[in-house]
Length: 418
Image 1 (spheres, rainbow, N blue to C red):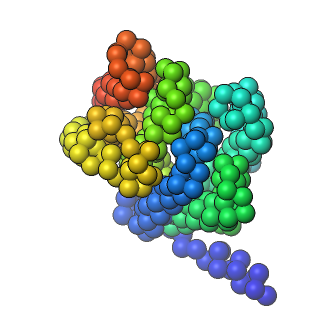
Image 2 (image 1 turned 90 degrees about the vertical axis):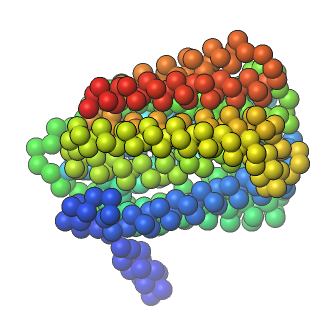
């Protein structure tokens, strides 16, 4: 009887009728979606804080790199996959029936690639412990299913339920971290906490919303859409989340890897929230068929706010960033002020670029977005290689220069396309 009541509770999670489309960004459930993203982000940071403090810079290093590689792979492949689902569902298609082969192929191939990568680099990045290979593959497979479910929810404007998923994701990961660390205080324990997290999507049964709402909708060519998006996201995430790998390439030590990882993880809060909420923006753009004037207005506002907040973020990062990192993670994790300033400013620029890019994604022009990110990556890498200084400084300088370049490329392409 209790199980029946629990299922009835989940079935009665608030959802939005189609007529609510007229309300745009004021649609019911948006506030809960934002709240869920904030709770999820806070829990993610607490997960890193708990792990870093419990294991120290050296003991935490394998999880720092596992999280880094997972974040890159998830945002390069799984987030675009979610947006593909969101776009197709928003256009009226039933993706689980029509696109099952694409979804399974992408998730399976990505999990296999993750397993191969962690096996090849096991001795260098993961202390020679093959358990991280198993965990990496399971994390990607689980999150692949979760991202598809989130795409269905966003496409059908189930924003309150989407927010619930984000909340459950953070709470399950954090709770599992406390439990598993109490049993065995090792990096592998935190890896199993990451594996358990995406099971939260099963609690809300997103597949029950997958239905046809449009007629004679021409399917988006999945290979072209996803292929270009993967390429652009790969360039974006190599800049954003590949900093610890850059430190390795430039000869930085294990402790510096953890310092750079925790600094980037803490300061990319705005972009983490955007990844959680961009389905809301994409759903609006797909359903509203926004005019060129609407897109121009949105792009102008993003450009103005983005450049202003980047400057403010750099100043805040310089003055308060090192202290905040030290308070949260300990003295050993404290970054240099200039490093903190560059990371803060670069993340804000990346957030602005990601938001502008939603207009290109809604139009199916992912190739235009990809060229902006690839151009930014090329400039960033060149800067990192030719600049002088410590490995940490060179990585962060390349990051902020690359993000500014990508922002400029995306701005011109979005305006020209609209």
